[in-house]
Image (cartoon, rainbow, N blue to C red; front, side):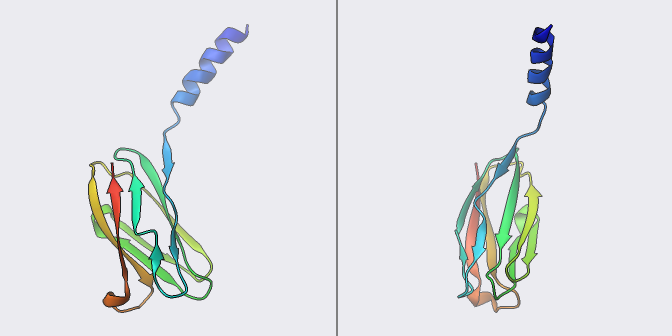
Length: 111
C-alpha cells in the first residue's frame, strides 16, 4: 500500500527545479558592496539578492546577465537568473546616483 506512495513521492520531488542561493550582496554605509565575487551555477536558477544599508539606496547592475536591481534603504531587492554558459561576468554596485568611480566593481563567476 505505501510502496506506490513512496515511489510517487520520489518522482514528484525529483521534478522540482533546483534553485541556488548566492551570498547576498550587501551595500555598506561607506557606499561599497561586499562580496565582490559571487559564484553561481550555469544552467541553474539562482536568486541574486542586493541588501541596501540602513541609510542609503543601492543599485546593482550586471548587463551581461540582464541584472538591474535597486534596493531602498534598509531593504533588499531580488531577481532570479539562469545563466546558460560558464564565465566571469562583471557587475557594478554602489549608492544610487553615485559617480562611476565610487561604484564597487565585482564579478559573477558562473561555473
